[in-house]
Image (cartoon, rainbow, N blue to C red):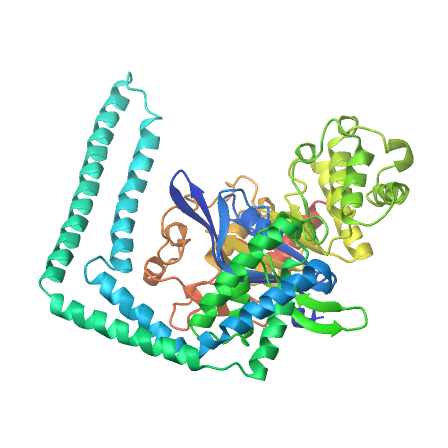
Length: 592
């Protein structure tokens, strides 16, 4: 079955992830788009620091507190948690009535939307006549921040030096001089801003006639605006639209605690009032989604059962927009689970194995303690724990590394997730156990029918477990395709370098290939192809312009200028030519 025939479980579109680190912004993920399909095995490969783990942490809202998704969407397709019901009685009925009345009362503002835009524009022009524009302020602030970032870098380096060391003392003197230069540069930028502000004030004083004309025009616009609003009437069609929106407000905020509902109502009223003033089309789904995003994600109204007074809705779940723990608890662990690389840090050393698995089952599934224990023993048996009834009350320290990892897998699978993320699941294990764990995950995937996303730098693991491979570098997916396409017909020079690093390809007496240099600093803006400084096949354009994504086949894409029709023809490196035959020979030589 081709991927385009499979159901998309998770769809990432143009995702950017940033972190605030010591006053600076680090962009870890840059414009990533990726579809994860039902029942597939996807491997995400790349060097340490390339963004593999950060990308998959966005799936389940596990970014560190200083990290955030600055752009893009991550749509989770799951009918079970998307379907939302709300009974239109009591508190919900009160929310509906208040919001319906609010919308009806203010819908006349829509009639003068263009006039309101002109008023806002003219007010901004009048304000800018004696002040800096928003763009000018942003430009000055960006210049100052750029210098401040350099000060932070130099200061951090300064702390690593020893003033008692002669060489370090010279370096300290140079850095202090540079820091003084940076401080002087900040002062010059601030003085430049003050001079421009003073110039604007002076120009304003010398041009009061123009200012008076603008103020008179603004007063006239406001008067005309008020007349249009007063004369506007609300049609039956508009009232029906408002009724539907009020239903969606109930569906969207009704599942939250009372104090949160009050806050969300206030936020939504403010957002809808702004949309009405600007004449936004509130029948447009994209417009409604943006309005609801000011507080919670939108639940679309589908139908109303008058017999039970029940509203039925459907939520488009965008994991990039979810803000609240209660929402994540329906996804994290329950729909998207993770197996981490070190099992001992994933388990509580003072709680028994059985209780740790039971806790997860009781939290996410409606069942009794007896049923939760039965399910715990069942999943322990499935992951290969011998005599699970007897080992139910064991502690983690009583298990070997391989057995502990089996328990971590059992915890991840205990709520039957649709996506299992395996973050280097075998790295911390003895090589004799690694194959057992990989085989276990593959067997359980066939039995339970979940999607597996492997995060690894070990291409040997990829060859054994993956149907598709995404190669990530510098926070971007640079190549994606089926495992056969990426291994035997790779297109990106970084993929070539990773494959060349396979130990299986090293010849006796020769040095193992390694990629020269290090991944780029994600603090700095990356110009061109991120891999260009390390790429022996880099073209001149790689250093100045980011390559687009080129289509190789229906399932194979790569982000490299080498695929441009105008690029010179470059053959694969010799050591990965005929890779299929070489790997077969390797396995035959080892008697596999």
